Image (tube, rainbow, N blue to C red; front, side):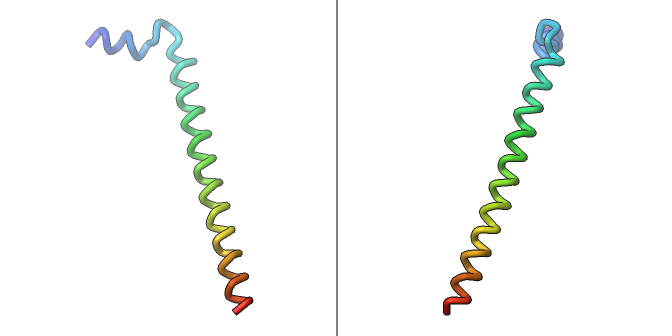
Amino acid sequence: MEALTEYFAMGGYAAFVWSSYGVAALVLIILSALSLRDLRRKRATREDAAAAAA
C-alpha cells in the first residue's frame, strides 16, 4: 500500500503531474464538445440547403 501512495505522490511532484493530466483531459473534452457541436451545425445547414433545393 505504501508503494501505491508513493506512486501517487510522484516524488513530490504530484501537484504538477496530476494537474497536467487534468488540464490535458479538460482540453480533450472541450475540443470534442466543440467538434461535435460544429458537426451538428454543418449537418443541419446541409439538410436545410437540401430541403430548400427540393
